Length: 363
Image (cartoon, rainbow, N blue to C red; front, side, top):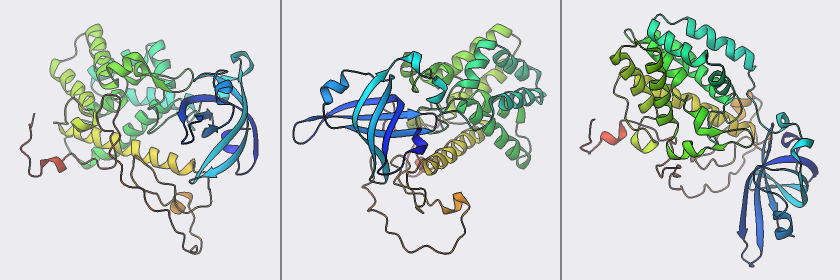
């Protein structure tokens, strides 16, 4: 049984990968466990209320476990009330059953990447991209890495899928704005998140490496680009500067983790297209993993600060449903902090809103 097969009020006997493990104390003073369990089809929360000390000692985060539980829907989301579990040795599992993968075929995306690089006219940028993607070890990491831990493209192959999607958006946008440097934008689309191959670990559950926690993918990516520029030589200094600026500014705002704000047309376009593809993927993922497939609305998304209407996403145009009451919208939370203490990039991403009534540092 996979996560996607779990149904309300059904008994569950299955194996999962432990993505998160948190011990807490109930109001009655008894400990309990909250687990995030995953396989290749999705994630589900698990609760352990009884024999907590004994069961907790038997496994750790990133272990494989065999679970006996009862499925129930709580606050609109599927949850497992776990009665028993045991650790499963790595030799008894197939890793491919536990890590989600991109729906697009990996070989097909790799071919698209090669073909895309060949379309560039700028010999310097083409040579730089070849230095990345002709490197067997680096190319393998780029093809297999997820794009994020939790917000978007959270699956193997997610980084490549996201980067190609941004590049396709570039090719749709460039004809609308004469004079925009298409080659520079394509290079930025393919390299803006390249640092994630070292920022994230994904041999088990997706997490951040020490380098990722201390430096972050933006800094790592700029370092990787500079290393390649030095190694191949001959790339004009101004061209290298413009490309590195795109990496440094693609999150758009300081509060979203950008060391610099976009200050070229190409950097501004890249920032918006990256944000667009990330959010659309995040919304679609939120809709598809909802426990109640027949509901017209999703559950409340804390980071996006809203519910999402999903009938049109499913392509449904049936007769109107009876009115359905949504639960009272939770109080608007403060924007969650990222690893460095800066707020995460949420839906209120307007790089010009801060200009109002403020004397900003324009550089």
